[in-house]
Each structure stands twice: as structure tokens, then as C-alpha cells.
Length: 187
Image 1 (cartoon, rainbow, N blue to C red):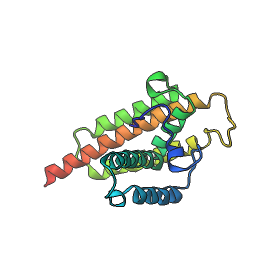
Image 2: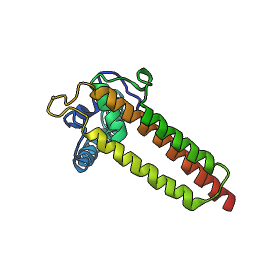
Image 3: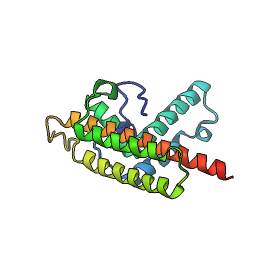
Image 4: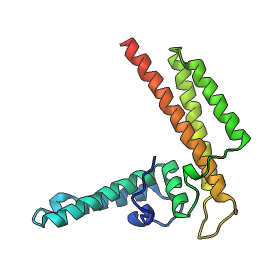
């Protein structure tokens, strides 16, 4: 989960990118490497401890910005935050389709509970990953481009998609826990 340092922190600006959902990940990585190199402690070996401390804080913020912007769900979460969208705690409502989706996944997990069928668990991971890809595709069309809002309800729609994506990430974690348990028992 994204933990924002303050309402005014803009990871896009921090990394020199516009506030847009679609970003060039290769350019982001290059920018991250350049910033890390410029902030590395070896660059400031003869400087005061307060300057070194400030450099460490800046490097920490760059790391946090990079990690958020590289993850499409966390990037959307941050962008929604910047556009004054509802936080997860402010929007708990979900559509009937989303509830049905969650119920289906919970049933799948319950069925897997005591089984050690690694192939089936892996197949469920593939399905979960495909669902995340679909959700990310839906997110790409929701965020404003060039400052223009496409749909007046985009913030609500985005929040619902993000809530489902977080649910799927939780499911994925549960599936990986099952795999670890199987691996441990087999060892």
C-alpha cells in the first residue's frame, strides 16, 4: 500500500514526469538511476552532516517515487490522490459485478485451502495476473489527459477498479503463501 509522505508530495514532479497515468517506464528508470547517482553519498563525502542527511532524505524520496510510479496500481493510487479522488477508506462501495467477482475468488481460495495441487494454484495465479492486466487497461482510459476529464465519475470508477486490484493482490499473496506451504512440506 502506498504511504504518502504529505498531501503536497508529487512523485511525478519529483521524477520530472507529467501527471499522467501512462508513462515511459524506460525513461523513468533512466531518470531514477541518474538521480541515485547524483545523490550517492560518495558525491558528498567532504560535506557537512546536515547536507549528507538532506541528501539521504532526498534519495529516500526518489526511491519511494520510483517504486510507486513503476507499479501501475500504486501509480494510479497516487495519481488519484493527486487529483483529489477518494481514498480507499472513503469509498467502500462496490458494484454487484465486483462483489460477484470477489465471491468467486474467495470460493476458489476456499477450494484450494487444504489441497496441495501446485499446478492448479499456479493456474489461478495466471488468471489473477490476467485480471490485473485487464484492470490496468481499464485504468489507462480513466485518467485525465492534457488536463481534460473524460467522465465526471472517473474518480469513483477509478477507486472501484483500484479496490478490486488491491483485492486481487491480496489473492495473489494468498496463492503464493499456499505455494510456500507446499514447498515447505515437500522439502
